[in-house]
Length: 275
Image 1: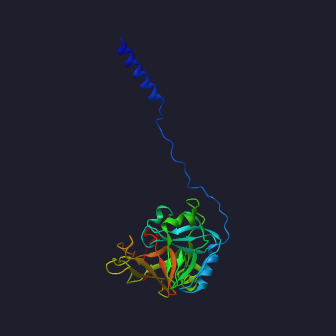
Image 2: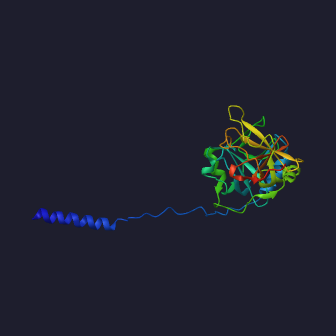
Image 3: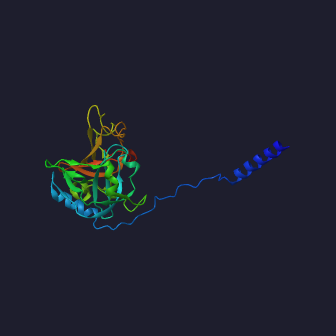
């Protein structure tokens, strides 16, 4: 009889315990739209202009200044390596050089970022303004160490849609490269030239670290280089043979304008090719 009562007691406790246990779990709070709203002292356009004025190979240390920008290009495709590009509504942009892999996991395209620039360096690498951690006596730059990234970068909201691609012509980009450096643009009415259409975006890394393909306007009076890394995931894909537009980042190397593609989905060339 005691055994029966004990069994009933155990079953009753088990039922009561089960009924009190929470069967569903709360999702972690959504913090993607949280913005710490840090004070911002300058626009990216200000620093981009200063960086261009420094001249290739030169740099300067930055004082106590915070800027805000939106990531317009990350390292997901591998076309940027240990770098991201940020732009703000002033239509100014900078490259951030980080000693970190898989940056897009923390700072994907569309993420707003506050950058605490105090102690970092503004450098000009062959005409391209960059933010780096340090510069040695020989002028060689180092990336912000991965363990220190959080000391300088504070996440803003995601996504931040305040920065969108500027619609421009190829001729405008060629004539005003410094105006568009490190910004996201959409170049209309272009095609890959006859030598660059229907081929891979880049040669394999075993043959070349990077490959130039040429974009041109319909009457062949203007053209520009699209530079793609042989190590990127874009490398084996074929360039389109049609006519249309391309969204990309404007860059430069040794005073020569070039474009950097983020992803093949940014290329829309489905109209018939110009003859």
